Length: 97
Image (cartoon, rainbow, N blue to C red; front, side, top):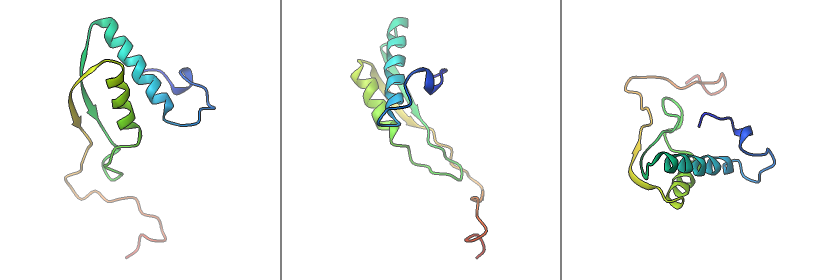
């Protein structure tokens, strides 16, 4: 996904995740041209001190890959999880306890 969102779609789409589907179909077409018919997928959320759950576009992106005829091998979650005491950002109002 080396292109910007504006190069693929208009700004007047009803859903903000529609451009992800367009990217997925584009990736599937490129893979078919090269000769790849199967993919291993790595999904990543923000991680760290932010949310560790995947966003709403992840499931629809996988569906788009499957619908376009690609075989999906492994689905791996590669979200970074801190192993130390990294603190969240705190505002002034609720940060003092």
